[in-house]
Length: 130
Image (cartoon, rainbow, N blue to C red; front, side, top):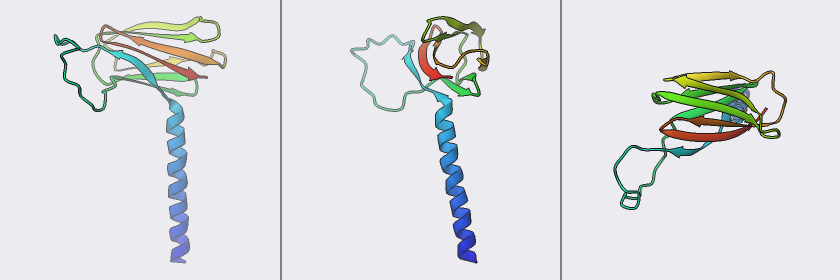
């Protein structure tokens, strides 16, 4: 009986873990671009370093709502979302010192969209499907 109970608990834990990993993978929008640093060092003279690059902004998609969270304080940020097939801008807004932003895209048709997040320090873009 103990073996059966152990196997049942192990199976449920494994199944829940596998489900949550797939769920989280489908939500995050990968953002690519430039993060500008404010230093007075010539890029050719800079030491070459390897490590994890800090991502100051993260974007997630859940039920046709895009959530953008900011890991550091950015004075002014512009967020723009365009539809790939038409090139039409479906959302454009400027935020002052945001911590996070939610963008409801429920009225938009299914398709591929691009998100652009631009400030004086960052220029990031990503692609997602509704």
